[in-house]
Length: 517
Image (tube, rainbow, N blue to C red; front, side, top):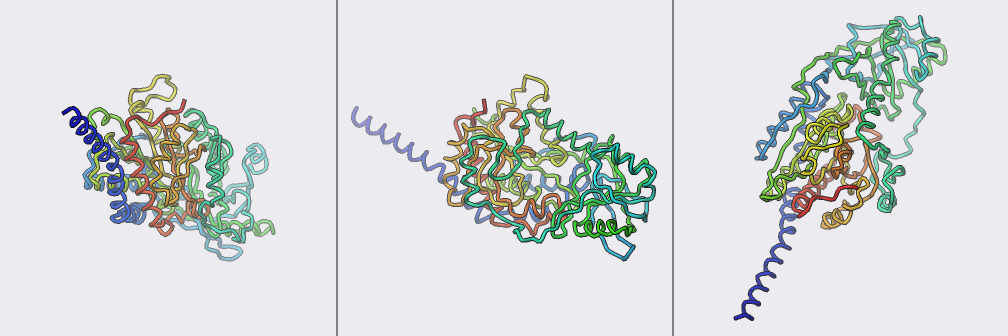
């Protein structure tokens, strides 16, 4: 009997081991079927881009898109979907119509788009164009231009250098770049993938940097107003003909709003500057009909949850996120409708697969990322503790990890470990089933200036996904061409499916992911 009992016990243990070992492959098979064969990700990004874009912070259009996202996830049967406000004084700003032209020495339609939160022009304005190269030295600007700008439009900045477009506008990471990133041994400052890799150590540093950047133009704007100038034209050197009108950053109710300010195509800027160099004065005609308003209820983060199934672990959370807001001149498809659609699809895949993760999975679509991560930062301050306090709320210890996507619509290639070496072997194992998709690059390198770094500051394991750049930095990022045409379907399907698999595995781990020392 003892021998039979030992045999039976051994058999049961072996059966249990085999069953356990088959559980993950079966779960991944369900995720793959749902993500690759039943994908909804392109439907989501099409709605976000064509119907609900753009989604400028503080606007009615942002809130309409947020309501759509909330209703969509409720219809999928998420266990919880809700809003959290992040800003009480973020102004909405919307354009009704605008036009910019050169009327002398000959007619030219100027390809333009107004910067956000600029004042309306109060009708059509016509004036001569003058060039101011820089306002870094305001004393010099005042000395040179005081009393000379009334009724003038300002051509602001240096003329973009000639670009013959010999280099491709779109690319994927090369094998050399990927190998170099894998071999990196220091998080910063050198970055093989050419992404942001600053040395920001605290949220205070981040807030100071953003505040300084937001206010960099204010003195110059005030001077132009005092002098009676009509408006400003500027350009970013993106060829051919790409218009890049992201900030101003005067979005709070108390901020002084600048005069009408337009981003124009670099080729138009070049011609205007050459005419001025020849002492031929262009005459500029423009109008801007724009509306500023304050509706605090528009400024919400969107959160959705799949409640954990394990009695002991369900209070712990694996978070994923992407910023939901966009700039205003296009539809916000690659920045960051793509990331938002992918993270929504991750939640749909896990729910539709019928899987029951041990930990709660929480998705956040952040507002105000383009204004200095104010949405995710407000969430962190509320849930984890105020920035300058040394003690943290207990909720900090309940978060196993945060995964973020905000680098366009290119395929996932791996993860920036953000200096957290301890998670490397864990992610290596979790991504191994998808090695055939070239998504398992792990680099110790940092990347900054998006929402994951807020979590990193609180010592929560926060990570950004490595993505192929495609034409993100050359064509779509903050431009009038941030549209659905630059979102590749296969890349989106791979991203959503692999992240769903990764998030599910993190939620199943016996222990939370290790934190940095």
